[in-house]
Image 1 (spheres, rainbow over the protein chains, first blue to last red):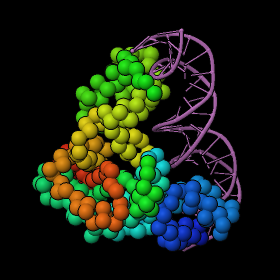
Image 2: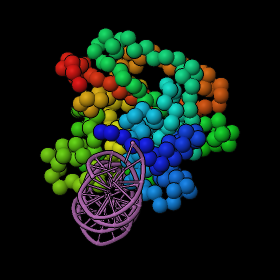
Image 3: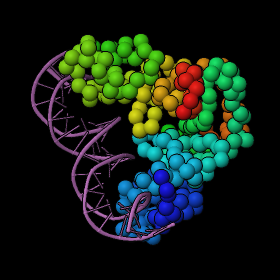
Length: 129
Length: 129
DNA sequence: GTATATGCAAACAATTTGCACGCCT
DNA sequence: AGGCGTGCAAATTGTTTGCATATAC
């Protein structure tokens, strides 16, 4: 399939590149509409899928919603159980997983998703619940 | 809220205890109907939520579907990109994450979800795609 | 007896898709 | 010109919920 470089896709990618909040499709939709008022939500979803297939973005699943991230290098996520924010966690902050045992058993690990749940520094400050 | 020990909940829990396929709510529903033919899907969902709140089961999110697991001890999951199967990975097979750096930064880790993606031993055997 | 749980069906929320038209290449 | 991409709206999928009745305690 020959792929075209459409304005819609460019803008969607730009928006995703310029945020670190790991937005939902809906958030992206409302941002894009500030630039392309008549874009449709279906187009947003279709382009997110294309960008993901191209490896330009990753999809992270948050409950029954998807979130998207233009950071595609290896890193982890931390989700605050309290406010729902998703933080990037540097790879170096978490020691590497030892995969050799798995590989010996025939599991071929292409990628992994690691999500930590808890309270983030901001919510910790409040100090209750 | 005072909780009752209903037959429906018992059966749902039994079924989940006796499988390791990490089933969806729908699969559980069809299994329970073999025993309680007129149970409703809503009841299955409601009881899965209750069991989760009690800590008797865990919920693992697989794309936009939830899967459930009566194994609540610390372990990881491996999902095969090819067949979609979810395998239990023993904690000992993966070296522990180093959390102290995160804790120092104020992140309070309650729990984490780790999902590895790739090809499972069965699908590896086929050797293509 | 009384409040929680159930069955049913309708409501919801997130995402996908069919179709006719539009616009990149 | 031709086909991929779009906008729109309807359809799908997974899950939740309102309500009247049933049941555990």
